[in-house]
Image (cartoon, rainbow, N blue to C red; front, side, top):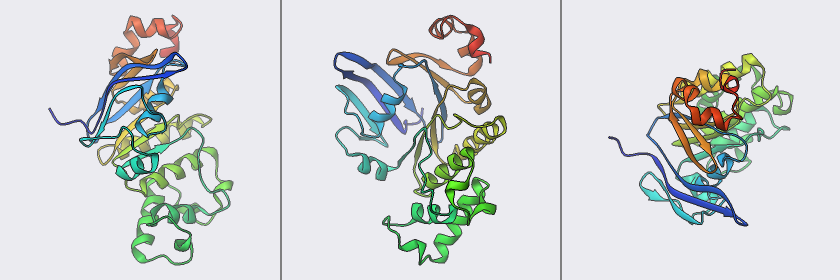
Length: 249
């Protein structure tokens, strides 16, 4: 079996006596696309915070590419190759799509690429715009984009940093049905070159990803498998308020 790119081993996180993560174990292989679901309070955001160094676990180990991430700062972990997309898109709304991407691919991060950009950067920027289908909006302010387009722009900005792993938190919240389908197809197209972990509540979106699913409950893994297995699992049905129809939406 291949060595996992990421491993969380017996992770515990306590907030004033409340166990947000309760012995969480999870691993992802290089190039894998994994969906994570669970009811509110299951620990989904907390375990992303642990991976990215925002929260220090009470105990346990986070291993990425064979190295421990425990005790590292957020910017150090980002430089190791982990990119995170938050629920609300974080783009520079007063800058154009092109300028947002110019900042994302510049090293070190600075405003000069907006004035001076070599051909290598230009090619990379256009490539990123093509990936997320924003080339026709290159010179529009990011603030004028639809909510879905802003989500795609932020994903492109993360890709500009060439991460090994993308952590994507609720990318289709507030999107239209068409945008939701396009976002699922986009993430599927990125898997293989990148390891992608996606958290969301939209079951149709999760189903369209056609990927392994991990269900969290009370800070630990309740069940793992494909969507068909998850839908039929009695423990999962009980966790989702005893309403199997919610998983079948």
